[in-house]
Image (cartoon, rainbow, N blue to C red):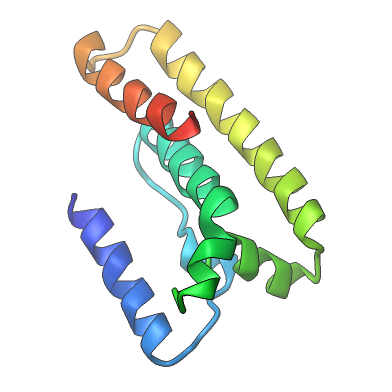
Length: 121
C-alpha cells in the first residue's frame, strides 16, 4: 500500500509539471518477489492499455502507453504489442511462483494472484 501511495504521489508531481516520465521512472524495477512483481506489471500495464485514451481526455498524467511511445518512438499498436508480451511474461512468473513451493503460505499467494486476475479481466 505504501508503494502504491508513493507511485500516486510521483504521478501527481509529473502532472503538476506536465512531465512525461521514462518507462523506468513510471515503472521502477521492482525488488519484490516475482509473483508480486508480475502482479504489479499485469495490473499497471493492463489498466493503462485500457484507460489511457479516456484519461488523456480528462487531463490525467501520462500513462505507460504515452511514456513508452515517447521514449521508444513507437506507435500505439507497437506499444500494445510490447505490453501484451510483458503481461504474458508476467503471467508466467506468477504461475511459476504458485507452482513452486515457497516459504510464503498459499493463501497469501492466492491474494496476489486474484488481484492480477481481476485487473486482467
